[in-house]
Image (cartoon, rainbow, N blue to C red; front, side, top):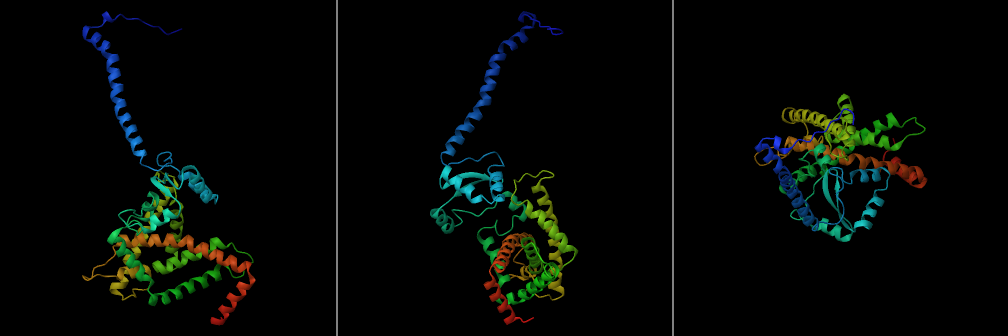
Length: 345
């Protein structure tokens, strides 16, 4: 070949030490390869033995697992068919990986009994990494034992019967403002987005005592970015949905921290009512030593959890109620008659 030359150099041309080194090179290579393969062999055999104790199924690609398949099925409204296919392939118990964590999918009456009758020593509630990172590690979903009971009791105190009548007035005010702004004079409306707007405004009023204005608008924007990445693969890289969600969560938590400081001043110095919103209610709960039962971090994380938990469920329920009233004139007439009977205005 042009410009390429090959040389055969006798081994005797090298010094004795070099010749000895070159003669040992094949054996050294074999030993190196053998040492390299030992840990791989042990890892594979160990994994094979451990996999014999695990349910059938595949964990899929690292981090990703079956996340994309489930998300696509949810977006296409075929999640039930997706799960049924797994049951046909692997049976009622199978392993998978969702959103960066290994998981076991169980199905059937025996599975329901196992979940609802097991205590913390058998099964522990744990969220996927994307949710725990966005909502926080001190929300009630992440707590167990005494911490879970302490936070749960504090949250339930917000729903005392004597407090509910105060919340009804706030909800009624938000509904009236919403109808005036988005419904009156309109020939046609898209219900679900409007119900989400109404639900968010009620949440801001009841949970935060946050009036309409710049801060509520900014929180609404951060909230939308935050929930957009909750069900995503937890890969924290720039320009990913998960990364944007984490940044929005940090901004929302910073705003809530400032709001908690304002509420604490109102309680301690201005004599504000401890039942005016969820934050003041949690701040007002004290133990025998007059210390706050719930930490500031726990307040922030659990307020965010309730905000997310009540957003989609309430707005979807309200949408179906409106759909029912629109499609059934008899029910609509009965409801309207009841409204005029109790509130002629």
